Amino acid sequence: MIEASPSLLLVAIPLLAAPVTALLPPGRLPWLMTLVITWTCLALAIWQLQVVADGSVVSYELGGWAPPWGIEYRVDALNALVALIIAGIAAITLTYARRSVEREIPRHQIPLFYAAFLLCMDGQLGISQTGDVFNLFVFLEISSLSSYALISLGQRRQALTAAYQYLIMGTIGATFLLIGIGLIYAETGTLNMMDLNVRLADLYSHRTVHTGFAFIVVGVGLKLAMFPLHLWLPNVYCYAPLAVTVFLAATATKVAVYIMLRMVFTVFPESLVALTPTGLVFLLLGAAGVLFASVAAIYQPDARRLLAYSSIGQIGYMLLGISYGTALGLTATIVHVFNHALMKATLFMAIGALIYRIGSSRLDRLAGSARHMPWTFSAIVIAGLSLVGVPGTAGFISKWYLLLAALEQRDWLIALVILAGSLLAVAYLWRLVDAMVFQAPAADTQPPREAPLSMLVPIWVLVLANVYFGLDTRLTVDTATTAVRLLTGAGS
Amino acid sequence: MTEFILGHYNYWVVILLMMTGFYIVISRGNLIKKIAGLNIFQTSVFLLYISIGNVSGGTTPIIADGFTRHSNPLPYVLILTAIVVGVSTTALGLALVVRIREAYGTIEEDDIHRLDASL
Figure 1 (cartoon, rainbow over the protein chains, first blue to last red):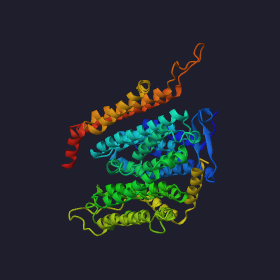
Figure 2: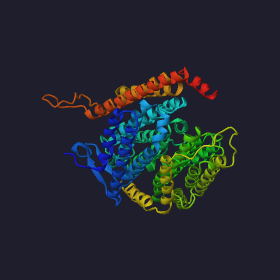
Figure 3: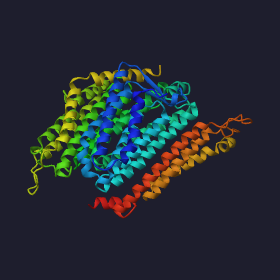
Figure 4: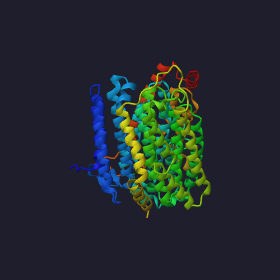
């Protein structure tokens, strides 16, 4: 007997819908189907979050096999929040995507494109729901394989090499994860996350477990583009089809951050992590990532590449939050995962609208476009302010918590790095504003028209969300606080 | 000591294959050779899982008279899944190489970088 469970439905619906979508005739139908599915998933994710927001845990046993033998879907506030990010971004991206997909993807491939999109979302949702580490690996590969295919559909030939490079790096990362899982399975004989936490507590000094931990951290680090393992990311964000860039930029690395949180805080016991220099490594790499990537972003000649480097920097912030391992730091990381998904989706969508009208995202080609596309431009400015962390925007909330976490540790240097990162963000975003407002367009270019309404509406929904979550932090901070309580309390 | 080394020979093979595959992926510029390296790398992990599941003197896990000592079937099942994932990755990777060859006329990484830089 299968009982209705939001976590099962979240995984099953897109998985079943994907092959159906692939068989639909080219045209608007595949898009419509995917749109309905993603909004359904969003509704399910909201429902699920309401159920677990009070700190309760919902468990679903697949096939009726009791954990730890069977696969368990185990959902607490953190899982539900991650699922909400994925489904929410997917729904809003799909609403936005129809025109850009029709332009970028050959007509006969459109059903396959949407099928791959559904699979990619399904893999990520699966990661967010499962309580089984091997199941997590399988979902990671489902989302990765479909994202390689999606990226390779980009219009320029560099999309192919970007997809290939990501395939190699991503597979190495996932295989490292698989090795790590194998090693801890060899020690404990279990794959259930909660069960692993209990069993590894007695084995924390074993070298096999340490090796497994190292493999898992490096493997997931590759997936989340942890500096200096970020080399695949700029090309992917730059050459993938627009809708794919928006979706991956907002969710893919965030899901990897979630895996890292689960591995470091739920699967492995605190006693083991404390023995390793994990915190220090995350601190150094996070700080280096913030500074290096933000400086690199200033020198990019292309708006998409600029934002890609900015993403690497933002991941640095999330690592800093993890590195402290304190309640404040983890809250900052989780809130930033949510807020960064919002602002990067907005920015990439707005850049997408520019590309749709102008045909390029090179800064010199964008010259003078602000006057002709005021709505798109103001969306970029507001989302940019959020990225910098100006009070009144979502970005401020997460930066504020991160700063508090650093000050709590009396870590003045890192507090400085966080502020410097914000200043550098002003510098690279200013280049975008400068190009769009103050540069004169080449004499022979046609002035672009404002973006179509079907793009502007989703962009502005996200812009308003950026402002809303900067003022009303009940959803983000409260959920994150509950999630952190469960995350850090799991071992005790 | 010798007993330790010989007794764990399958794990030494795993490490050897793992490093060989990983080295090929990093060092080769030919896109197909990279995929081959990736395959060797993944195969080593399959061997690792199979070694973990083996119980000395254990038989295939069948419940029947005369079979009392079983190998652990779960790692075998897990690795079947991982093999499927590996095959899909290889297929997708090779498909990408075909498309890259159509777009660039070469499958050497250095030449591809040169062609992109000259644009």
